[in-house]
Length: 118
Image (cartoon, rainbow, N blue to C red; front, top):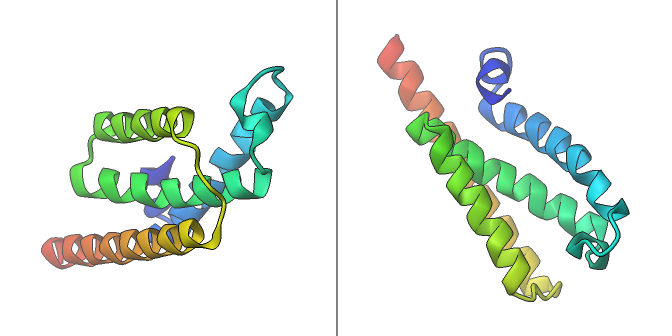
């Protein structure tokens, strides 16, 4: 979905759209008895999902390899399963900083590619 959207809109907007679709796709996890997502705030999950969407987009834009995105996604799922993520403000700040850095790198990669193709 990301490569198609990036042909029509900017990379950050394409990533946001994919992130929203991705968060909606995972809503069913809150209805599965015993799933770890039931103990997590949906808002917190949505914030993490959108941030991960930016990181995955950055990886995909840099490598054009879905496999690296799959590895990153699996790694984050594993971490969420074994690390108790405290929902205090420090985590939100770190999340915002990492997302901002990912967005800036994604925009830089896109502009670099546009300059190469012009």
